[in-house]
Image (cartoon, rainbow, N blue to C red; front, side):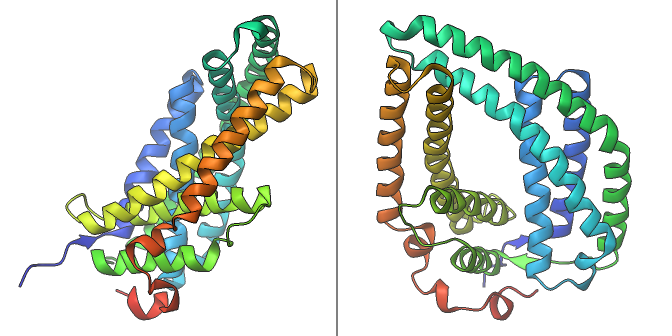
Length: 284
């Protein structure tokens, strides 16, 4: 009988804690596009990992250290998100400007570049303010979790846990933009949960890839939704640039809806997952 592939949630969290320290130092030195993206992503991964330990009913996850860590991570993530969004918007404009709107595009990019400079300064300030406290809190948190090791999950347990978590937390697809955006955010967390599985756990990694695809397709739509709104506010609804962005937003929304209509990764990978309880399938 084959040995089951095992995931190690606490060890994975420890790696993310190391990663965020490196990302913070890079951003403090120079908050360029790649370091900021790495910082934002790593805060999300740590938050998802703490959520996983909560799902597993680890009592110590509700400790004061965990609460403080989530609060500090949220502050840093929001500051990094503002910078990252402005980077994405400038790239979108550069790649998708029609020939008859180049002047307006240049003006909009210049405005966004100025906002990006201010947002980056705010991010650096936030990191200087919270860096030491976050590092100390995460170190304390790892000591708390170190007391419960070894904590393991089989690949099958992790897959079922992820699918059930998404089924319970993601809203049903609808025409409401907020609901559609929430599905995308929940898919991101589900992806990070499933990525606890080692690479050789192919079935669980397929689930992670399916959630990543859903996240990226939904994210592309939402990025265009935001940018078309910015263009409408700054250069007017009648602008050729605004119209071009609005059309692209409509196309990406249609793609996202089509993806949702074909079934979420839950339906694709395990049609019966919604009826199962995580605590009965995912406890180590």
